[in-house]
Length: 441
Image: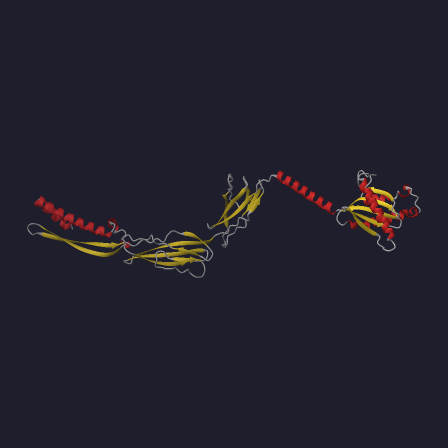
């Protein structure tokens, strides 16, 4: 190359313009060859670094060129030079380190070296290797020769893989990626809650836990995800226990997020139902009305089932009326009815005495209109009771008992009674008790 330059300079001095033209063409030819080679190498600037970084490149083509320069008189000179085409190694990229969260049954994890490249544009091949893993057995890769193989992470821990990228001329580079598998913590926000208006509700997430050995819950976060119209309540708290106080009745959705020391998260949701304030006035009115209806029904049932003695007649054994006892405020009212009743009673008594020897029934009854007259017969007296109600015959034992008591107290008087009412006054208390009349003391 130095000889060529000397000849060019000498010819330029001797032959002037013609030699200058020839030299220029030669120089342009050399530059063109160099540019052509650089273009086919991909990045021509790499030539500036061949000596410095020659160990990183592999020579794949060497070309030797000879240049002969002749002048017009046949004198000339020749020089040779070599041009080497070199290959740059590929660039391996196994992807960024990352953390994945395991689920039940394991998790499919995809490795990705697709961003690897070759600066010369050559085809590249991949070879993945498992470097370390938790447990006793290495997880198998779906296709170690693929740029994106997959494996199944079943245990928590660190999985490290390397990828070797090789170009068509055997140059290669290596990169590694670390996959950290973590089991998500279990969030437990508690049971759904029903609260009274204006009441404070204690929310407790302390039952949340992390199933990873050596891992723990690092933080808690609560927030409102749904609320009734008109509510502006905001819940912000970073502890396991929080106090919730609603501003509007309705249903609130509360979300819990727990994060473990490895960065994995778990979620849970609970609902708080806040009741509307109760208007007590309609409720009290309803209860009063119901109590009144129950009382009325009870009273009517009691009236229908109760047996009431309206009138009592104390008669001698000959049918003569000794005294009349009544519930009526005006004992003299309905005198015609009472007279007819008394005649009916007296006829019954006369008939009873006539059959006394033939029949031994001490008690009898007969109907008088819609009412029943009950008759109790003693040794000296009769008691006739005008009763109303269902099955008035149930009063006969009580009437008979009253009659026996009166005769026991007045037995001697009744044997030879002179008709003096004062002699039989002791019967009043028993008859009034039977009638249900209580005299004020």
